[in-house]
Amino acid sequence: MRGKVILVIDDEEDFCRFIKKSIESNGAFQVLTATKGSEGMRLAKTQKPDIILLDIIMPGMAGTEVAEELSEDPLTATIPIIYLTAIISKEEIRKSGGVICGRIFMAKPIVLNELLNKIKTLLSHT
Image (cartoon, rainbow, N blue to C red; front, side, top):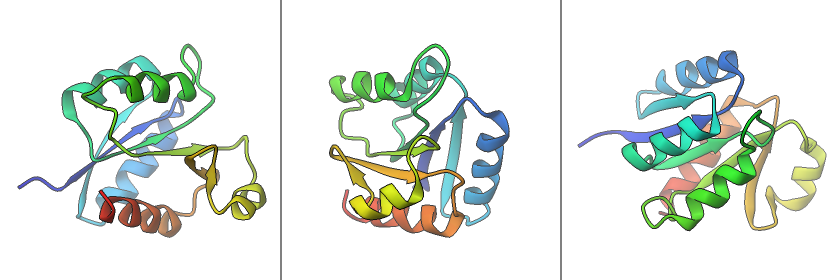
């Protein structure tokens, strides 16, 4: 049986590398990365990850567009998404309980332990 698969879609290559290395060092997860929305959608459809970590502000195709398209495809509609973004402050997220408009958000810079806890909690409910 494969470990849980996480797909990171973020246009910042260094951030993708950091998240991949940090999460995979835990040993429980395999991390796939994409630096373009279109590439992330292709990976989501072919690899069917257990969870997607998605940046909002990306050139070409915004994270919100990626999430909308994935939610409309029966192959990917049930994959949980956590938005990782710098456009909302940690304080705004704290006040909202981490959920805004029905979506889960985490503010950058990401605290790795908080991210891992959020991932584990979300995956335990799927």
